[in-house]
Length: 310
Image (cartoon, rainbow, N blue to C red; front, side, top):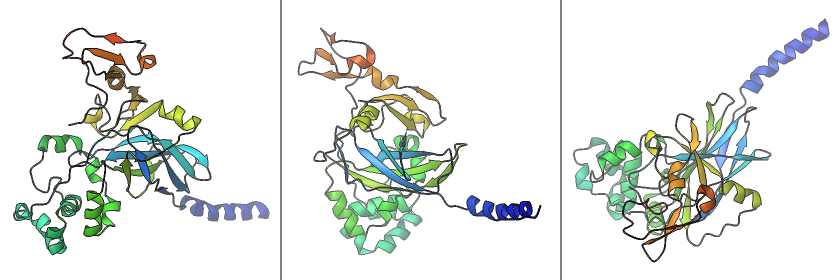
């Protein structure tokens, strides 16, 4: 009886310690992601509860569109996880420049400009992004498409750009000016068995480059050819993944958790030849078509794979 009581006391002391264990997740710096091919990304998790899952969120850095997508991560063991991302489309980042005179009637923007001082004049591109990030104004100059911002920055605008806030204005200006392509912003989350978020990493950023060389192993290539991409906002339903190529995306999971086939990408798995009258199936096995020959005006046919949006 005494032994039983002692065990009960020890158990009662251990339970709070286990319950208070903190779950932590961090995305790894992978250096770069290739244009037109899949990249492999990794994350580290500690203290995850049993039955948890890890998601990797991603989006291209864009002046208007800020909502994320996600893919599930695969455990490697020892708290390590990996996944592959879709193929990045070739998209140049628009370098916006802050126009301080437009901030005169915006108290919050003016406060940030006062803090930045002459640095804002010296680094107008970096200042534009900092004002965007540190204020409620998703369009610092009030000259972008309001409808696109309202529709396509619903949840993403709430995520803090930790990577940006760690840079000085000069560092950010130099980095932005040297980009070959829109970079990719990323973070990871750990979900408990009930689907609730247990932990979230800081947001990082990965450069996208045509010089990035990534070799996928057999398992990574297999996943890249059968991607399930998750959505975080209603507007993403029925549209191609913004500034990512369709190739390899077979299913989508919407913001409500509903899984469905990606019919948008399946319908557009075609490529134009030099002759605009000829349409060649680019992934015939995915849709059961060998090829299509069009003799006439191609107007009204599906757009080529992953055109620029909006």
